[in-house]
Image (cartoon, rainbow, N blue to C red; front, side, top):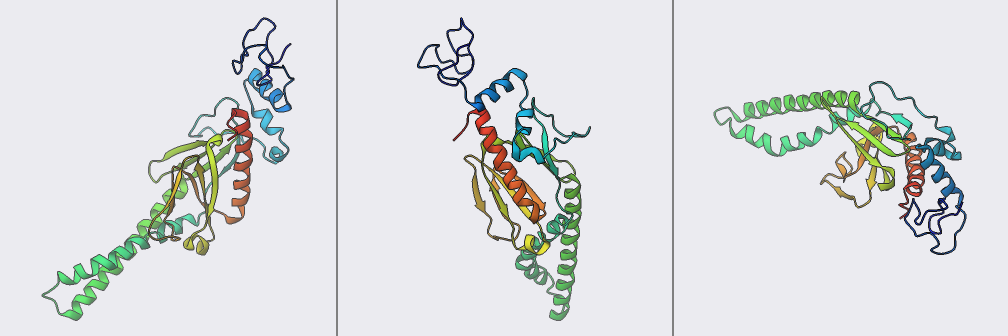
Length: 261
C-alpha cells in the first residue's frame, strides 16, 4: 500500500486523496510513516488510544484507575484515569484563615461605625461593646470559614486522564471543569504564606492564552489565575509529580492531536 507524502498514513490503491490529511496522492515523494505515525494509525483503526499511552515508559508506573459508579463525568473514547486525588484536610483551615480578609474589613470599617452609633453610652462602655461585637464577628467568620472548608473538602476532587485535567469544586452544589491537555500552556505550583504555614500547596493548570492576575493581598491565599484549572490544598511533596505528569501527558497529547506548538 502507498503512503501519504505529507502525514505518512496508508492510502488505498485507488484513492486520489489521503483519508487522513487530504493531500493529493502523488504530491511529492511518498515516505514510510514514522513510529509515532504508525501508532497514531493503529489508534485510529482501533478507536482507542489508551494502550498507546500506557506503553509509554514513564507512564508504566500509573495503572489505569477503575472509575467508580459515582464518577461525575463521562470518559471519552480511549480515555483512562491515570491519577485521582483530593485535597488535604488542612484545606479546611485554609478556608477558615481566608476569613481574615473579612476581619480586616471589619476593623477598617465596622469598628468606627459601631462606636459612632453608641453616642449615649460612656466612651469606655462603647469601646467594650465594640470589642465584644468584633470578637463575636471574628468567631463567626472563622466558624463559617471552617464550615465552608469542611464542605469544600468533601466536594473537592481532582483527576488526571490521558486526555485532560478535571476538577470538581463546590460547597453545597459543585462545579466540574476540565482542560484538554493539548491546551495546557503551563503548570504553576504556588504556596502562599498561609499555605506554607499549613503545609499545603496549590497547582494552577494554565491554558494557552490564559492570563494570571494578582489580588491586592499577594501570598495570603488571594492569588488567582483566570481560566485555570486549579487544584488546591495538595501535599507539597506530591506537586512536582503532578506537574511532571501533566507536562508529559500534554506533550504526548499534542503529538496525538497534531498541536505541536
